[in-house]
Length: 307
Image 1 (spheres, one colour):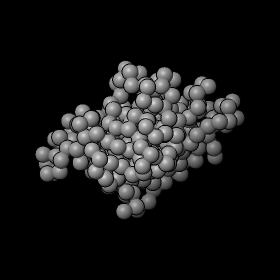
Image 2 (cartoon, rainbow, N blue to C red):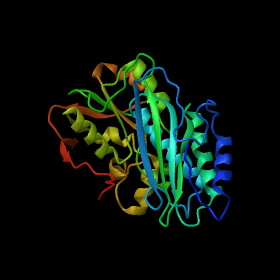
Image 3 (cartoon, helix red, strand yellow):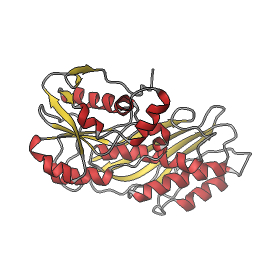
Image 4 (spheres, rainbow, N blue to C red):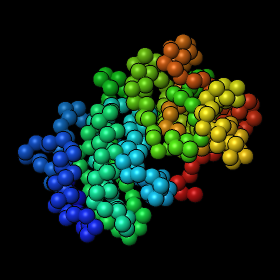
């Protein structure tokens, strides 16, 4: 693990690396912490990697949010990607670009948050890199995951026409605070994969309608949504936020993003099993491309990172 950090505000680079090492699992003696790569022992080469970058002022606000909370989010958003493929996380590595005034103590608090969330999902933080620059703080995490026993990964490209579309939980209004506390649906995704064999899954990071559109595009299907069913999937936060913004709660549910619930498509004969897992039905897939809400065309909207 290579972590160059010149932090005049707190401690020396070697001292910070020593303190971080105490927080992470002990690697083999032949690949000690602080070397150029982190050790990962895994017999099966069939693995997946995901990575997400969080930016101060975009995905969090360090003037308002504490560093452990920011660290927890940085780890959790990656684990949500793992959940979206019904995979099992193995390990994580991280990289920081610390902004002006961010100290070594702050970096340790970020690590604490990452370690906490990782431990809850069996994903140890095993290495990374830290630097300083004269710009807002950037945090990047990468997570490796494996198959869940003999089960395959669930892709976003496998949905078939006339599948039912389900959510793992209510959506909308995450900016009232839930966007800082993602709860990766890893356990629920694995149960769904074992019991129901989903045809496709994706996590809702950028907005229900936008991420559903991505799943449909990858699967070469469309989607017909039922507003009455979506009403049952609107989070209470969406209704609170609607009272402040003047937008409808439905609009918030369809486009807010950072809910980190899963969209799951299933054959239509699995309704009872899906309901038993607490999934919420919102519509079905169609042969016709595009999204429709109660028969009317629905424009996919959500967070566009490059807009």
